[in-house]
Amino acid sequence: MSPKLLHQPWQLLAHLGSREERSLPHHAVSTCDGDSPGGNNLWELNADSDTPVPSVVHSQPWWEQPHGEVASNHPLKCSVNPCCYFPCQHQGVCVRVGLGGYECDCTRTGYFGTNCTSPELWTRLHDWLKPSPAFYHFILTHFKWFWDIVNSTFIRDTLMRLILTVRANLIPSPPTFNSDYGYISWEAYANVSYYTRVLPPVPDNCPTPMGTKGETIKIVIEDYVQHLSGYYLSLKFDPELLFGTQFQYRNRIAVEFNQLYHWHGLMPDSFVIQGEEYSYEQFLYNTSMLIDYGVEALVESFSKQVAGRIGGTQTINANVLQVAIGVIKESRQLRLQPFNEYRKRFGMKPYKSFQELTGEEEKAAELEELYGDIDALEFYPGLLLEKPQPNGIFGESMVEIGAPFSLKGLFGNPICSPEYWKPSTFGGETGFEIVKTASLEKLVCLNVKKHQLLLCPSHEAMGNEENQGREFWSRALPQKLGPGST
Image 1 (cartoon, rainbow, N blue to C red):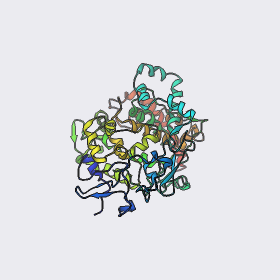
Image 2: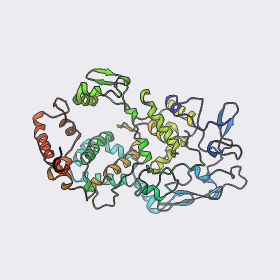
Image 3: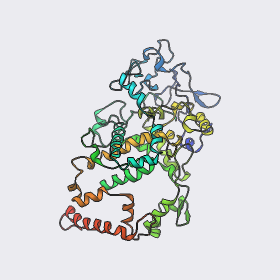
Image 4: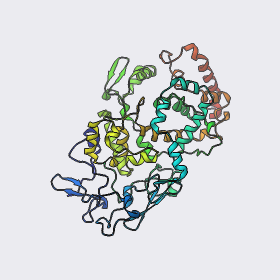
């Protein structure tokens, strides 16, 4: 009977802790006989429980063995790839040598040694001085009086420039990996039809973890990202902050960002519009809602309704659960590395237990039952179940991994480059000013028929800007579209 290598995604999300299928400890190893799906001889079946168990368990991790080499009489010498255990730390690259050995390429990691674990002098100093994500999140979400002063001085630009460069530098330029190859390849750079990715796929012979543009960018950063961050520092969209620095004005969507950005846990359990409550069945794909209520009513209703939550508990409504199931299936097909490996890649300490991840005992016990080892936790479930930060709606990993992708993607748009960011690109100084002063408030309030929303200024206050914008675009659009255009 073939072992069941993976618990099902719907069991993971809907029935955490199910005894029917469970994943196994991260340090499970191989027998050298028998077949398993994909040629991955890593599990044998427990005859009593119909559950796969490791046939042999390591007494110590691969990287603690001398020179990364398995002893010649070790029962696993025949088949296990030592790179399966991610021995190379701090973004070191694992290269297999022979059947049981490996080497770590520590080039430009700031570390040296067999497993890239010994810091160089400047790395040691940097690590000593670098604040933890929890520390600067606390600073950015407290002391509002201080940030009110900062936001009105040149210090705001300095801090924003630092945030942009530090975050963006976490995303490799040019792209390094794609889902076809476990090593750096030219195709990862040249083939733009593929998603890029920041960590290579898990090797095939390893077990996977069980388990208008300018206005839009400004609104996303200064309204959307600002709201999600909870920071008192006012984020700022100003491409000129990066002029004169080494910055790649080309963005590729990464598999990891595509996975991370499934935030269906923020969906409420029902939708309330002008006092009327609608279920998912009534609301989804029902375009008549827009016609019957209008943009004004929908915007105002959704602005008032409390959203769902991501982090620490099961929050995904059953009506959209299939989306999360699909994400987990995709992550297994693409062989994404475990959650803890991504925490290390983005400068965070790996979690040592499920309780440290979730902040509570019951959910941690269910995850322990399901996965067996915190290092076996998959990427997307880890993001969903991580405890939220204080004054935040996400866990630390969602912010520290998502922010670099987001800011790199937004500022990496060519329109933010010195060649594009000038008045002529937007039809002249008036158009340029409209882009530079765009906000979510203006986007909504200047495009509804009635200025009755509580969040909108009075009709008279908006009138001048509304007339200015309409007058400008009425002149500019025919010129851009060409003679005879409408």
